[in-house]
Image (tube, rainbow, N blue to C red; front, side, top):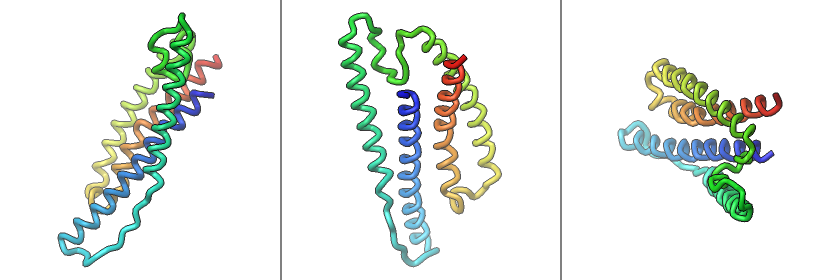
Amino acid sequence: MSMYVTVFLRIMLFVSLAVMVFDFLRVEQLFIQMERGYIDGFTVDIITWPGYVVIAVMTIFFIANIIQLILVKKNKNANKYAFLTIEYDVSDERAVENTRKAVSWAFVIILTYSFLILGSYMFVPNYFVDYIWYPLFTTASIPIVGLLTYLITYKVHQFK
């Protein structure tokens, strides 16, 4: 269960950060268009929820890591690096092996997906001007795809 929660929180962190950056870039693009004389003026509606989500997710991660650190400190036989991974128990050899396999698969998928995403940028030659959202959200999707691959691969190996 904690793996689902941590992967979901990490995905929410990337999505909210991407939306927050998109909102900034959208406003910045309007300023540049006004400066160049393409538009005379504009109104701005700033989206505030992504900032709140980033703060909330970072707070939850901080609290979860403090709790994990306390639990590791109480257990005298625990690995001292166990507080770094709240997804699984590092003393479980099977979980460590499943994580190794899942990370390997996630790395391969991230490399392949990154290659395809970067190649897709050449099909949108003016994406900085007209499609400001495309490079931002496709780049933000790279770690999300990696996290989902990691989660799915880990769960498949766990239930084997």
